[in-house]
Length: 70
Image (cartoon, rainbow, N blue to C red; front, side, top):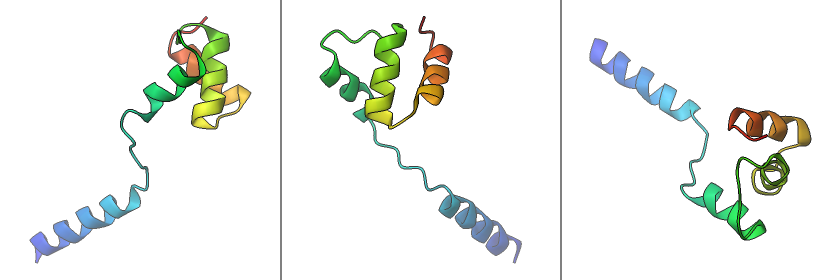
């Protein structure tokens, strides 16, 4: 009975994770926008974030700052 409960709980938690992982798409999108993409350049990072990740100025600036852009 406990095993069944644990299995049902694990399946419930797995079903809650709706995040889709698309491997490799994040790296190729900025390269299409900039031939020499520099993730540490704040302007390039923010514009690539807006275009590729559909972010806004605030979230992209925060994300780029955390990634080390200046």
